[in-house]
Amino acid sequence: MKSKKAAMEMSVGTIVTIVLLMSVLVLGIFLVQKVFSSSTGAIDSIDNQVQSEISKLFADEDLSLVVYPTSREITLKKGDDPKGFAFSVKNRDVEPTDFMYEVKAEPSFDFTGRCGSTFSQAKANSFLLTNTGSFSLAPGNSLGLPELVKFIIPEEAAPCTIPYKLQVYKGQNMPYDGTTIFVTIK
Image 1 (tube, rainbow, N blue to C red):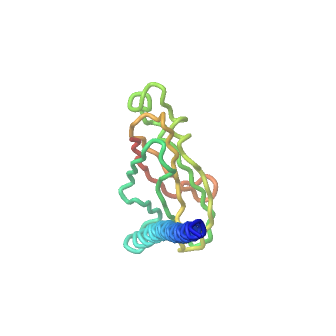
Image 2: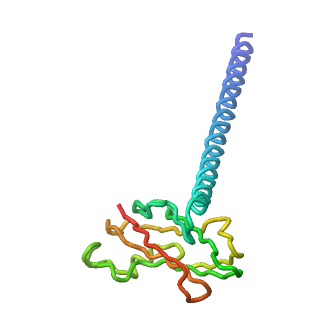
């Protein structure tokens, strides 16, 4: 009789333990889901803010090229996720126009003197995820979604500030607008 009672108490204890563990598991899954959904919402919010800021820049001034961040200075950490800058172009022509852009390290920059003896323009350009692109714009229109230029900085990169030239061309080779972006590697 006593062994049946002990078995009954043990099975009730086991059931209570299983119920409590399942509750903790469900609560844990719920919290993880909430954290991931809020981080996705934050990324979408940042993307919308960048688009909003670029639209404001076009509305406030008579520009054909805007860059975000407006300071044109970016600080990147070695080994971090790809980061960079966004830009948009406004077609000031009266005809639909095809545009091309190119981003590359400023060739006149003293790479070896400022970033180390093994650093070169080719190495600086290798940090770019993509360095060219193209798009078409109707007269008076600007890009609905800004173009993104991202950098991947390897762990072995020398800490320094590198000027990159963003050049936008009308058609294949007619310069339209451009600017310099300063990328600081830490």
